[in-house]
View 1: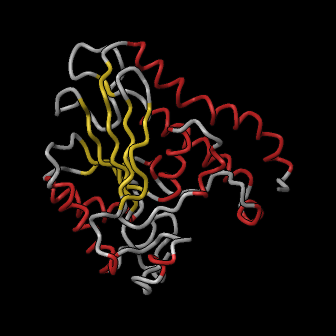
View 2 (view 1 turned 90 degrees about the horizontal axis):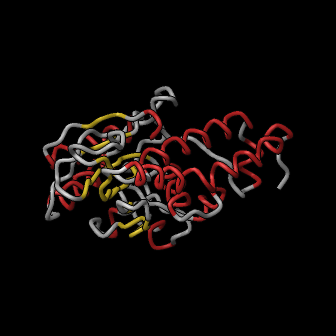
View 3 (view 1 turned 135 degrees about the vertical axis):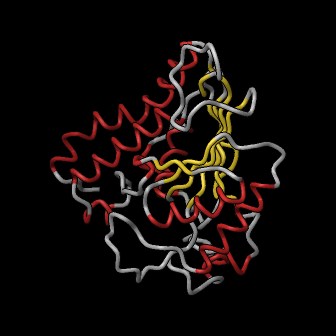
Amino acid sequence: MIWPREARRLLPLWLLCGLGLTSAAAVAAAEAGGGMRRELYLVRHGAYDAADPRDARAGKALTPLGVAQARLLGSRLRGLPFAFDAVLASPMTRARETAAVAAAELGLAVRLVPDLAECTPPTRRADIMARERPEDLLACAAQFERLAAELLRPAAAPAGGAASPPVGGPAASGATRRELVVCHGNVIRSLVTRALAVDPEAWLGMSIGHASLTRIAVEADGAIRVISVGDVGHLPPNLQSGAFGDPERELTATSAPR
């Protein structure tokens, strides 16, 4: 892979941060005391309208297919035998709309988190690297490191703990804090690489379908486990979309944008 000079110069520093920051943040939070188990339910937004002309920074709106996917997601989450403590979402339109539909099923408000917005970090794919600006790649990597440091750590205890409160507010469901996080494919894939402590450039090796669920658990001692990636068990085959490299899904919902 041929990197622009600026990215090559900063790559060693970025790699060190990418491979070490998540685990260090989790350990520091655990050592601070008062930590509790945290479960992240990471959701990619539903299918969206690629022809939507609005500003790219705001993002594009859901299609009827995307709304249906979000409703089925919400129904699945409502049937779980526990309550969620918070719903966090990217400020981009497709994620906000997906979160609003799902949160309505759960009776919860949505909190927007700027660092959950979509961007492109460094990848092993030379064609993508060639068309991205080095400063944008590095800014995205820094954004995802901040996000990992915030989310991939034990949750703060509801009272008496020394750890700083998590981004969604105080825990409400006992010994485990559960957060629904509605965002984007790049965000989820990057968080998975950091949870596994592997090369963060490997993120594009995963495919995440629309309205899919990815679960990550962070134990009170800082141990991180990836439970599932890209689960679409709540969607019938004809409503699945957005997973590249999967012939079965690419042949269904063919009108949905990737």
